[in-house]
Length: 122
Image (tube, rainbow, N blue to C red; front, side, top):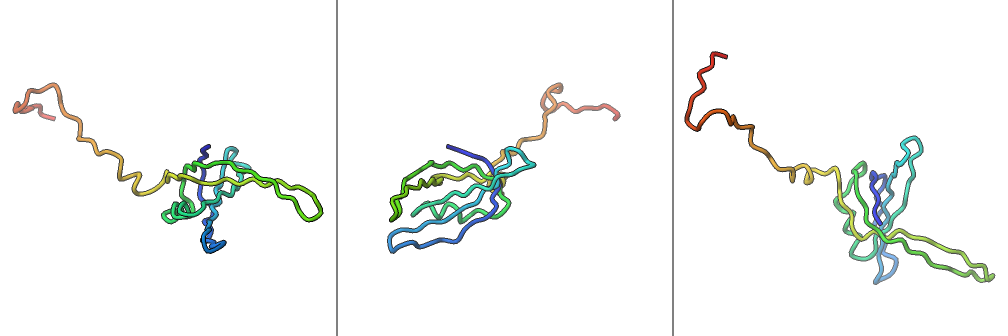
């Protein structure tokens, strides 16, 4: 799944255990700009580095997997949890994206032959 939005907040790296780490990212999703949604994504393990180059306000496209799982408490009541796990992120407003735009040569006059001077007075 993919979604486009604006980086609202980048969480700190959380070392949950000796072998497990995660990091949160909050995206402002404005399908209706009057009522934006703030959606929490998480990156796990080596994917936590994906957020290193981001800054607040960047427009991004987030590719993620939707995961869900049940959890039963001591009283026997089952709750369900969903998580949006990031596997790729593309910055849409980054200096690198602007630099990758090709530079084009100025338009050439196709009406004159090469080496022929234009002697118009204006």
